[in-house]
Image 1: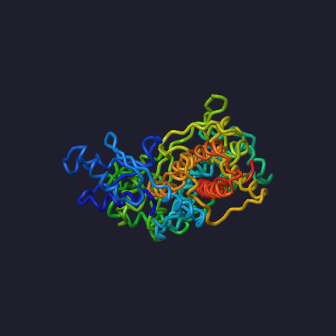
Image 2: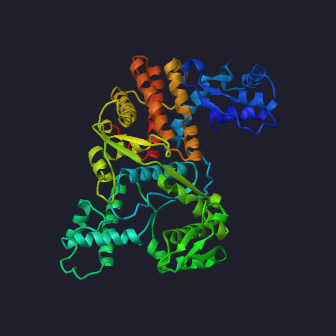
Image 3: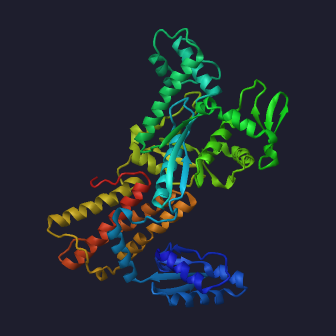
Length: 527
């Protein structure tokens, strides 16, 4: 149990019949202590007592805590200072657990399937797809770190109008003709056309479609691997048709369908949707919605405790129709969690770069990776909540200076490694039981508190599916660590103090590495 959790528990066990959970947060300013709780506000409202009485109740409870050094009530908040000896126990735990520090058993091995990216194989990935990729991968890492069993899946839409247009576009380029008005443009179409055998002139569109999407899919897989994004499974829409699963779904929904204007409609407006949706068009072809229902029914059948879909924000209107169909199948739609993410505005030299797959006007994820590398790409895509618009500054991401946040964080790890190497050169080795009571200045206390809060950030990131919490935590940790380094000599003539500070530095190194792992970013030992 973390320090925050212990304090929350101590408040809760002493105050009965209050449903709201005590909230303890890290104080933003040094003068407000290490932690702070706003639970006096809740208590005042729930018990219909004055704020002063509510603060007194919280203060009296926390005075008895073996963790608390000092308490101060200000403006409805109760500020808390933690005893140093409690923090010493935490860093001993960090050193003992190493790569496992921060792991929690929130999931208790419950099974989760997370489907993300799933970009149509009609063009190279752009930076918006990259956001979905690194966000999904980081969520999966955090959930696994939190005790869940996680599978990662990519769903490939390899049938339909967009695939036919891809084939028509490639064939046109292959024959030296103009691409259809609604077709796909860009240099990549010409590149694919050049790879097609010379004897393919008489081949129909399906040949060009198949050749093209397979080529593009290989690019997509390579680019995702370069971005440190891996999948356990790739599922194909064609298999749903080959195995008659789409037909089976339409039959199973018979009691919820009707015919109108030659099309087959599903009565989704009777459940969650704003209007009914077409399952089979007038031309007797199933809609994408029909195959998507079949895909999700199969996912439910696999027995996962939770399904997570990561979608671009333009799919917002699709949620209600999908959950309506799921409920009609008899499954619990609450077992499907859909996370929407805003697209990315990519900037170069202050100018916004427009992106359109069909027009061929976009910067590919590959180009961004070539320019700034995987680590910077991942970090910048993980610095904001998924539903927040993201501006990606390529020029900042290339800098090898403290201005660049990912460089600043990685330098924490590299600097810690450098300090430990220097100590070893001087014959000073880490000891298992240093005199941690020597770590008593305010910068050390601040670093100790920050390190102790890492498991809380993991838990919150897991509960709310928010990797940006880890990114922001690491940035704050780096700031505290670098400030400590500049103000205090770690290696000095005082042997016992040196050993205590080396122990602290080694713990900062462990936490930085664990946090970077959750973001899918490397932890270099030299920079």
